[in-house]
Length: 85
Length: 236
Image (cartoon, rainbow over all chains, first blue to last red; front, side, top):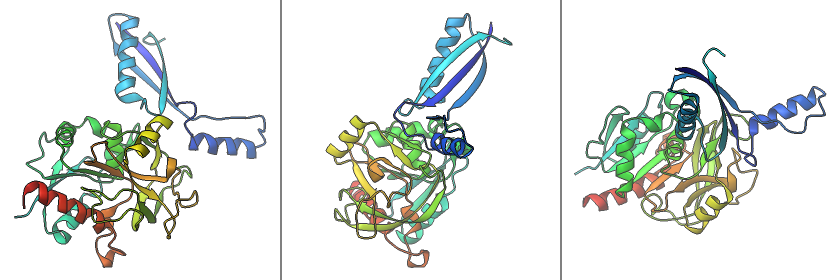
């Protein structure tokens, strides 16, 4: 069965985010003074075949550990659903 | 007899010819470019992972290069005690592959920094800095956008305790200050070794400072230190 996965990769809390800080500065200079913090991350979408949703989720988790995220500095979150959803 | 240096070339590597010139023309040794698809290092005495943008820095610098076939041979060579030096993108590849701890992130300034940089030698030891003294200040170019070294507190404490910090960014007179830090690296770290000391990763480019005509020769301190160790290991 084919599934679609969304992977959100972000720098871990406490890891300095130079891009996030630059965007924060930009928002402040536009007058959005309410913004307290910005973190910039990555969003990846994958289509994959797996027997069921939990197997698909496990596969994507392994991909994150090995390649899609760097566990030294990044955390990730996975959402899996039927393809085309 | 000359010794052999394997220079690993990934798609997007750009410093391999500078390394080859430094090794052959200046050190008088043999350099062999080894393509990332190869599975062995052709009997090399030393491995160089040069700078550049392997695989276009896609995903993260070094993230995809680490899965190249040649990297298994590099890991075996390193684990057997062979000297491995990774400069710039090579440092990023070594961190991504787990041969060195920590990670290299976007420069704090978000700017690509290409400039001559002062480095303080933190550890004078074979194989990479045996010809230096601790506290020496070297002037060596940097050229990177992702050189911001990060390691968690525990890893950083371990690096300090084990003497794994090889170089720190500093002022001309050797002071390690925030202003002298070109990229936001924790503890001004410019280069580290593994615990055994035979794998060095550094953001600066020692191969670009090996002839007076290039603007300086401080990179030779590193290259000649390596050469000395390689000769000893090869019994030359």
